[in-house]
Length: 328
Image 1 (spheres, rainbow, N blue to C red):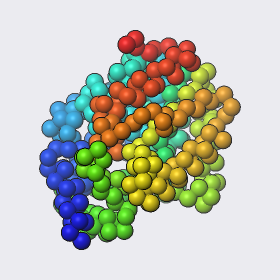
Image 2: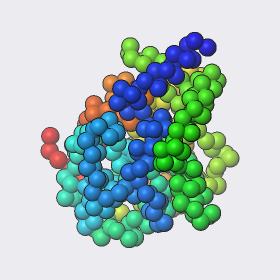
Image 3: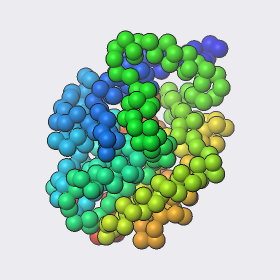
Image 4: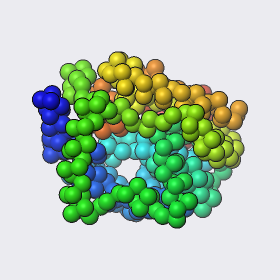
């Protein structure tokens, strides 16, 4: 029990030390307050935000369309994917697309939404030539899509559907529940606290864990939408990258994390098997990502991780003769 309490206390202290930790309800509240639901796009940011790192622990800006990053709707290239595509948890200028891509030649529609929302963004906002799509594959695409499909069916927005709260008193009431849940999850191995190269790390062994056979029909419906998006572009590169739970599972930090990593592999194999033949799929699971590339209490890359992804993605884009890639 003492070990569990010590692990949770580190999680609580992480937020007070301005380390990125969105699982904390108060950190989550600051994040959710930047977002607003949209009936067709699922989520957008409030437009033209520009915050110093005092707000979230890293500097953060949005564009005039309510997205992050390059925003030229007439650009030949498009970026889709969830939060790694969107860019999060590092200062402005350190996101991978800022390091790698010419902003005039790209439109970044990356957001943690579903494929139908992506298609609506293309229909409504994009006016380019559909030359290239970079789609960053994260295992959360399936569970994220489930939430937005459920919201659409019930006529609710995603805040109502998932019970997201942004009020101070609502958040305060959630805090003790969160602490109790973290104690329970730590006790049962769902929240894993471990040293990685001498540093304290937090891993969620149930992060987007989904049974493939039970969700197969739903996944096929989402894959159909994705393939309809892919069919619009001349070149499509789908790039899978490791999340820190993948690496922790392969390193044997816990049996539950090993199970999660295997589940993520199963979903990737489903994606590759069902993607249209013209889609170029690439896995960077053996790309050499390590502890320095991830935040200890957040799933996203550090500046070092963004730099590493940049150097791994660059040759894939060059081999596909993609325009709009910055020179080193």
